[in-house]
Image (tube, rainbow, N blue to C red; front, side, top):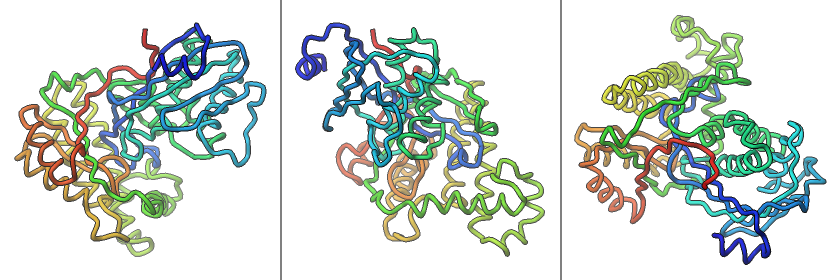
Amino acid sequence: MFRLLSLLYPNRNDIHVYSAPGRTEIGGNHTDHQHGCVIAGAVDLDVIGVAAFHDENIIRIKSEGYDEFAVSLDDLDVHIGEKGSSEIVRGIAARFKDLGVEISGFDMYTTSNVLGGSGISSSSAAFETLIATAIDSYYNNNQIGAVEIAKIGQYAENFYFGKKSRLMDQMVCSVGGFVFLDFQNIQNPSIQKIDFDLSKAGYALIITDTKGDHSDLTDDYVAVRTEMDEVAEYFGKKVLREVDENQFWNNLPDIKKKISDRAVLRAIHFFGDNYRAKAETEALKNNRFEDFLTLVNESGDSSMNYLQNLYSCRKPTEQGIPLAIMAGKRILKGNGAVRVHGGGFAGTVQAFVPNDFVNAYRSEMDRIFGQNSCYIMTIRPFGGIEIK
């Protein structure tokens, strides 16, 4: 990477290296958009950037496999119609400027093994964390901190990139480790970093890519949120977190009649998974890993039966996720945990696999879904950092 940086940007001397992790959702499946609770973890797949700092008042970035782009620090306004990484960088720089941080520019070459579109990260969150970490580290002596870096990334994505992302991805990429997030106060979510070493428990985290078609799934994702919102609106609330669960159960027949059976089931999933995310956190904090695994499996069953995000109802014959879960449970023989990963409908399956089962699990998944379908990873204990 240093050689490529020197070829792209010769005669640079002030060179630094930064890294930001991808993330995996662990508990709280589709709860964050209802201001619920989530447990997630940073993983050892990351985006790395080698940066050469200068005083030319411009940021140039070349990412492996993509064209170079440049952002002038004299022009940090939103560019209507520009929807790319340049707008992310422009938004991050603008936010730092608003916070009183002076930036004079840098050139950066990046490479990434974060799996885009896999639920490992919205890879944009890892990229945002990388850029904000570099700026905060070099120009601000790491004064902003991990939580504010996450908010800066979200700001850039929401107001410059034009995507109304929530804060979960950025927060986990920035904070690192196992992280519990409570979005009841959406402007200032509660954050707990959980000190737990998965490897010491004798388990590996494995993500399997079922090679599902991610195209045309927008309607499926939107329907989840819309139906949960409709149940909240029945009670005069904006999100399900504001709804009293006892009142929900008391009014279930009328909700079923006025909205739909599926909306009822998805609300039931929210209430259950919101509790389970808290319980999973307590299990890890108290080193009760078997209880944690039980909760992961219960959450996966709820996603399958109530949330119903294992496949698209518009593509009922494409069921890679249920197939992978079945195969995983067959291999694990009651050990560990396996469930849908991330937003669902197509894509990836997450498993916590005892070390003695890792080779058999990987071999079977690769046999079914193709070579290199399995990614064995660990929970990375730190978020965005400078590598020294």
